[in-house]
Length: 131
Image (cartoon, rainbow, N blue to C red; front, side, top):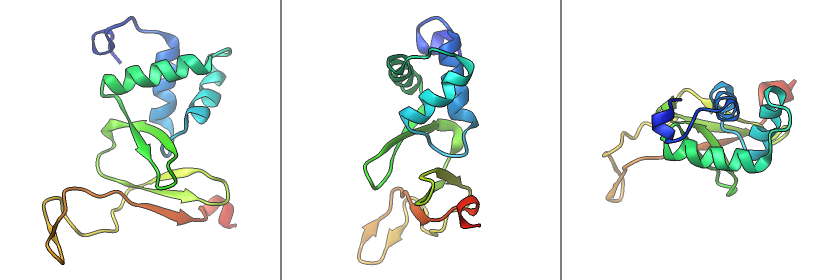
């Protein structure tokens, strides 16, 4: 993260929050980011997390993921096209590398629909909870 991209000085809190998001196996909630960030920055405040998320979004370093449930989570922008798996047992959301849909952007769907993009969230039980 550079100072000029954010328009403000670099801080340990910002670096930690960005690293928490980048190192996650899927998009995180504000509460998850806050909790994980406190391991490196004890006393990290929730207001700092919210302010930093806004700055990181404005800088184009992270983006929001809104699940079909309406829950907002955050992930790095550099991931490219991917989908998510939401475990109903542990409530963790994982990134999926493969796309289960073979409709390219700009393609057509029967009935005259022109597909520009798509998002998919699969639900079930993750390997850790399945055991």
